[in-house]
Amino acid sequence: MRQRKVLSIFVVLVLVLSVVGAQAYAAQRGQYPTKDSPTAGSGTPDTPLPGEIAPVQEMSQVISSWAEIDVKWMIENDFVPENLQGDYKDFITREEYASLIYRVLSYFAAKHKGEGYVLNIPRYTKFKDVDTPMVNTVYAVGIVNGISAEEFKPRNNITREEGAAMMANLLNTFSVRGLSTKDIGFKDKATISKWAIDAVNICSNAKIFAGTGNGFSPRGKYTREQAILTVRRLLDVNIGHTDTVKIRNKLKIPVKSIGGGITVGDKGLKFIEPGNSDDQTFLSFVEGLSGSLSAGTIKRIKNASKQETLKDGNYTVTFRPYMGHNHSVPDHKEVYSLEISW
Image (cartoon, rainbow, N blue to C red):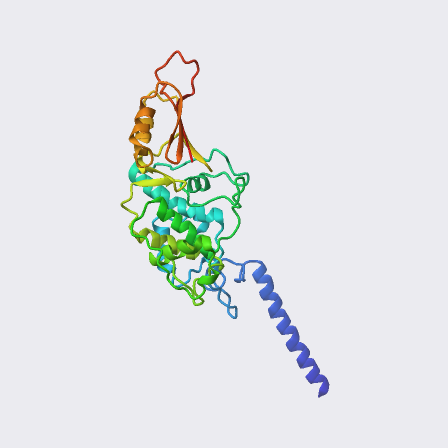
C-alpha cells in the first residue's frame, strides 16, 4: 500500500514536470506569450503580465498639480526648450535658466523684427566655461551676470533669491512701470541677502513669486517647474507693450534697432557694421540711443568726419565716420565703428 502511494506521487510529479517543460519549450518556440513577447498580457510590451505591478508614469514627466496648467501652456506656446521638458522637480541650472529666459527675449524680438528673427548679441569678452547665443544674449541685456569676468558657472544651481534677482533684472530690462519694492513681510526676511531684498519684494508684489510655508525660503533651490511657472507669471505682467530693452541694464535702445554688429562686454558696447553700403542699420541704431545719449552726441556720431571720443553723462563714446562708399579705403571690413563704455 505504501509503495502504491509513493508510486502515485512519483507519477504526478512526472506529469507536472512534463507539462511545465512543454510550456517552456513552446514559449521558446514562440507559441506562448512571455513577458518580453510583443503579444504578452493584453498585447503590448508595456502591459504587465498577471501578478505583476502595473508601471506608473515616469516620475521625470510628472508635474506638480499646482504648476501643471502653466507648465503645459508654456510648452504648447514654445516657451520651454526641449531639454527642460522633463525632470520638472530637478533644480534648474544657470545655463538652463538662461535658455528659458532667452525664449522670452526671442518672442519679443520677433514681434518687432519679424517672425523668424534670430536674436543673438555676442559677448566680446567671452566666458571661458560657456559660449552660447542664449547665455551671451541674456547676459547682454543684464538679466544674468558672470560669477567673475571669465566664468559663468553654467551648471551651478539657482536659489530662489537668485531666481528673483534675475526676474527683477528682466523687468528692469523691459522698463516695466509700476513695480514696487514695498516690504512683503516674509517671516524669514532677515535671511534674505541684502542684494536680493528689493528683487524679492518686486517679484512678490508683481505676483511673480509667492512664498513658501516657511516664508520666502531665499536659499531654497529653484526647480524647473518653479522657474517655468514664474516665467509664465512674468508674461502676465504688462511687458507686452514694451518696445525697448536695456543693454546691461544701462543703455536703453529700441528692440527694432537691435541687429547684427552689436557685441557687449562688462563695461561697454561695440557696434561694428561689416561691409554694408546701406547705412540704415547703423543710423537706426544710433537714433535709437536717444533715450541714453544727448541729441548733440547723436548728431555728431551721424555726421562724423573723423574719429572722435567724447563724454556724455556716464558714458564715454568713441566713433568714426561711415566709410561704406569710400572706395579709396583698401579692403575695409568695418564700415562703421562705435564704442560706448560706462
